[in-house]
Length: 319
Length: 287
Ligand SMILES: [Zn+2]
View 1: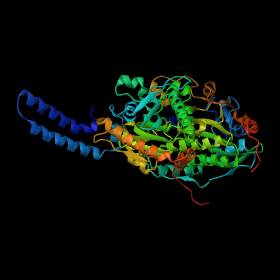
View 2 (view 1 turned 90 degrees about the vertical axis):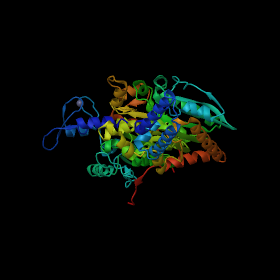
View 3 (view 1 turned 180 degrees about the vertical axis):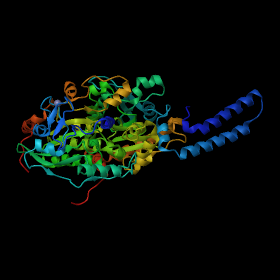
View 4 (view 1 turned 90 degrees about the horizontal axis):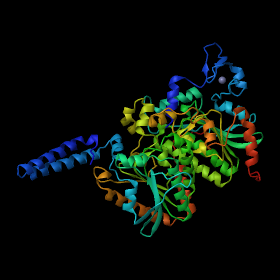
């Protein structure tokens, strides 16, 4: 498992453990108590590191190459899943996966941004950065969900919508904007989870939800910390300051009233235990689907509108 | 995102028209063709270069003068103002940026909104102001746009919005992103009520503004030569590492790619809007 830069103290301990193991085998000596000591020390260090992560370190966890991805989570969470492809207009975007799924007696439409775990996968998935056809595929599936009275579950994990020539030609802005407007009109519940990176409009494009959850080490921001740093701080290396200033962590997003809940990850980040992450998301999905069962379509739509209508902080003194 | 380009430009030149160092400020050099223009001539031509047709950026006051019937504009939500709720600090605090922008412009934030008439037709309208922090959309812009749309949901007056914005306002963090959803959700209600919404996209309309209410008009009208994009040209160049074609992301490019209905000269805009609104509006009993 790739260790992150701030996990360096751990790397040293792990190296030591490996050395002792080797020594114990080669020299045929019992070093198990020494090894155990270092292992428990490592566990202690890991706890210390992970209870005090800075926003910038959380960004690194959110982007960990082995972080659980949408397609894997879907397979772990749902009983059945049938992937569906294409926007019926231009093509099929591998940066967004989606389809129909069941969970117990619930039928849902589920979709999310898809990142890869290695270079080859990431090139295929465009690093989770959709083109317009990705958003249009998502909309097609959501419209179908609305028609067949199926709740919509979305997983958000993208650096942002793809900034490319063809994306602009095919109307990236229009594709995202249309989704924002149409999602506001659906009469089935929309439950969204930020599982990794919630990058700007590209994240929101499948995130106009009745309920929004964030994984503990997920982030959600209007622009990447690097982008913000290069514009406002004139130095992309100041992304740690930008990550802090923009308030992008799950705790902060919840404080601001944008997220409704935080899903705890295993110690050391979600990449250590995909199944645990999946199970916790599954429990939340089930609970939310039950919650919304008693609401009418119009109530569901009104609840979503009221949620977004209340977003904004401004002053309005009397005239 | 594409507010990057605004900052880049800002470093090179200040404002949209280069004023010559002549007392009285009576001469202006055209940004596009470099023609020396008499300020008064330019103003009487709605700030369109008489020689090359270049459209200078204009203030909300100028927009109101050029587009609406005389003295029909009534501003609403005048006291709505921004607040530095994140205590955001980059090279200076957001609170200071707000104060500076307010004292320079005499405005609370980057949009002016209200009611007005176009050739006798009443509309709810909003005009974005690029001179105020790059026209960036924070909570105030989102709220004012949402309010005029909601008024139209009630009174059925068509909505006309003039956009000019570098995108979301980073100093308001995630809250600025959410204004995209808020304004678009209001438009969903408007659509349901079958009230026309005309979006006039002016230079520049990028990032979060373009990817929400700006592009969602029943009819999208672009001013000539306006930069209209999701990702800014600089971001795209950095991503793909090649030069962008000439005219990329300009109004005419968007027209060719089916994203706007027309590119309309500012001097024709009032007539065009009036014709469209008359044709589009469902006859209703006045309320
Ligand atoms: Zn000129």
